[in-house]
Image 1 (cartoon, helix red, strand yellow):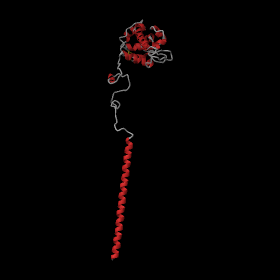
Image 2: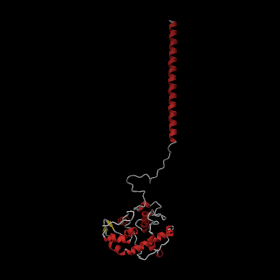
Image 3: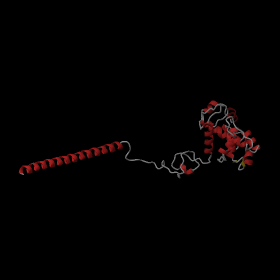
Image 4: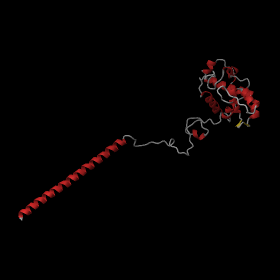
Length: 242
């Protein structure tokens, strides 16, 4: 009986030691497993932080919603669009008129020569230049100041020749377009005084276009409503009288 009890006690101790050791190994394994996943998480978080800034700077003017009326195309017809910009608001002033025509004709390039030989920012023909006192095309092409004077001289000359047309038709609506002085002067710059007179003679029912297909009607519409009242009508205007 004593031997049996002794054997039973020894077996009990062995079993206890075995179970205790197994639990220790399991606990040790779980700790190692926790260390592994915790370390992996820290490494992933560290690497991820290197691909994005901690402080994201946003520009309120760029992040706009659908109700924001701000547009990023200039010139604009809204004066408020120019409040914080170094871009002048031209509105319907004369500077807006001449810049708009210059952009249409040549994208405001003073040394532009088109395929038909028209010159400069406002695309003058050599014969037209002669009528306002410019006989050196090369000098004209290389002088922005002379080109601006030529534009003013031609406006004054055309206004003098179209004085009666302006007085008769300004404020009327022809072919769906409200006729204005600036529109008439722009149309004359495109097609000449004779073509403008014919357009009104036929009450806008006959279309007159230049060699590139641009119509007088399109200029009457696109360049109408600008202030050209300060241009003094002078049928004999030249660059020397401006």
